[in-house]
Image (cartoon, rainbow, N blue to C red):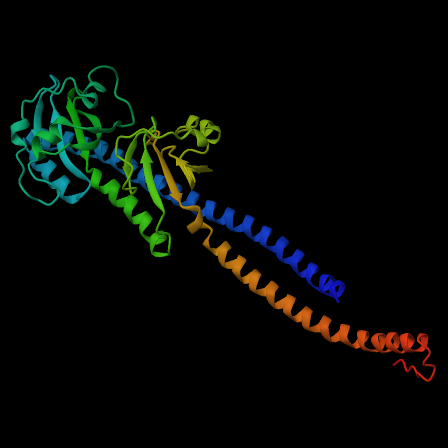
Length: 357
């Protein structure tokens, strides 16, 4: 009967183990693909948003050239543009050829008056967004200054002034340099994009999923992870082998604008890392998004499958045991009867009749 049990149960166990192994691999791949898509989605949305901002500064510079520059209404145009594009910008300024602010927006993204007139005549010759255009020919693309704490925003708003600055030269109708226009991006927009991308996966049960945005030096720019500080430098060597080629292909390459993700096990988490390669004429700043999730949550479906297979295996074992008992009993009874009769005959009782059915 034991042999029958083994013959019946072992194939079922083998099938279950093979199925579990295959399912585990498929679920692991799906979980990593989901994280890769999440990280790539953040990078893509940010790249598209910043691409549009790089176009805005060129457009605004062209508009100023063809009207406000000569009517003395540059500041008024800035207020109108800032309101029309709200909440994208916190401040718009223009510096003259000598490097001093000649015009500035006077309202915030909510239309409230701000103390920006105090910036007029402020010397900005040392600012990267101005220095980019201080000498040399005009480039087709806008200058983009990576995320930084800006002193002008800090002076107006009294906070750290975190922003990405876009600048482009303004020329008069004769082609002479009239100054440099600078748009100061509202970083809250980037934080909102990250939060919106993260919202649906968490609603779907991914409570441990987190998104972290880092710059080209692996410094944290924004994160949903409460225990990870903005400005901290992360050790992302686990992704290095797959990221080198991706980081090396900036805008202008055939794959420009298509984020690629690399998956790895990182600090006890399942994680994927997607690198920005810019979008359109926006070259990108080398940013990357890290999407991570606790393995026990990412593979929760595997545990459910294991329980189901365990229950199925137990059921199969029970059925096989019942069948084996029934079959074994049918075989054992006549054999036991034959054995008993044979033993009595051997003891001298020759009156035994043996009937085998």
